[in-house]
Image: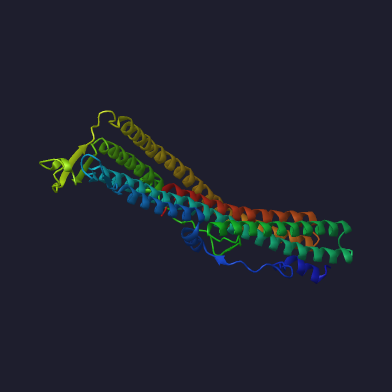
Length: 415
């Protein structure tokens, strides 16, 4: 007859977390999936840089509207006017300044959409970092549970060996499995810290401190159809950015055309104390002040800015080609991600609903059979390894499903 305590220790699974060492690091702050994305949108380093570029683009609009300064000249002569002055006023009145402002505003629009593209990329990276952290935490928890099971199994086997119900080799074998489980816990815990630090970076945490994932990863139970998602690609940031670049190139071409129009200048001057204006030279009369005015117009003969206009037209053609390329690329990414999501969904459902329960039931039955002397220890260890493997596979399938949906959202340019 088997010892009742031995049977109880084999059949009952005690899941207890491993105690941390004295003086362990403080518990990192926990964030949900949505909280992590909100923090990333607020403080991600790449977005901070993109928003700073928006300020530069706004300043460029002001630079484009700067009006050239007038100039003043004062002179004297020995034979004619003792004092003369000239005020030169540039006249930018043929649309050059307006065209420059329009081109700068078109560039600013592109920069604003660049920020949206940067957010699309940051969102993808932050979401994947959260999934990686969530998976690492799940693996670490599964490893801790496995180590606890191995600890209980080791105690039961040692008791059986002591009463002569099991060979000595069983105690050595189960101890080796316990050491392996403990080593897996250490490695999994380190992975959690590394993943938490990576997520913290995307959340804008400058001190390198890790965070912890709270809650589940996000992926829809009933996603929209592939055709519905594909219709959103043209409105996504990557394609809109290329279209904006087309508009910016066309605005720059219009600016170059405006620069063909002549520049004009108005000169206003006066001559005072000019003795040659007296009826009789050297008569001591008070000569009148002579006022001058002239209008100068640039003659655009040597520079029609044709090469500049051709360059901007060519850049617009390049941008149009990029629009088509971006649409094709985003469509391909969407299709691949959507099919991956479907496959991961089917795999996760099979593992969670059928494989994991079956492996858990098999492990329990094998433990009971070993307790009754109807199975060898190696069968128990194999059943436990199978159970932990399928549990980890189920976690990885759920993470793969979440990552696939992240790629779907990135392809359509999720807000």
